[in-house]
Amino acid sequence: MRLKKCPPNQHSFIFLFTAFATLHSLFHAQILHTEFVKSGFQCDVFASTALVDMYAKLRRLTLARKAFDEMREREIPTWNSLIAGYAKCGNMEGALELFGLMPSRNVISWTAIISGYAQNGRYKEALSRFLKMETEKGIRPNEVTIASVMPACSNLGALEVGERIEK
Image (cartoon, rainbow, N blue to C red; front, side):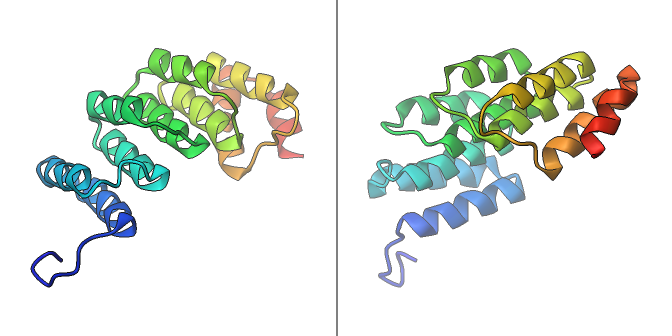
């Protein structure tokens, strides 16, 4: 892009962060991160969230957390990206710590925690978090939440909860 005298904008970085996460290319991701900083787009919450998400998907939680901590402003998706990254790496304590620090949560936040516990074989905690989510005002499970908690119901023999969820 620079060779064509068409400098990247924040949308370019969002696209490229997503692409490099998909390609599992840490080398290119770090080069792109350097260019991102040089370009001065760190103040863009959407682009910075994409940066956090990229490092989380690359399982580079130290880099993801550093990018997260350096952000001046964070939105719910920023928190969700890092929480999901911790959960996918099996660090449920780190995920739960962030979850507890969130100023507000949505169904995706809850699903990341529930799914993380279920994927890490911690079915009791997954079901417990789901039941807690049900008591939260304004939070309703979506299809992904339900798909995440069903293995917990199955493994724990919590058929009555599973049947209630299906309805």
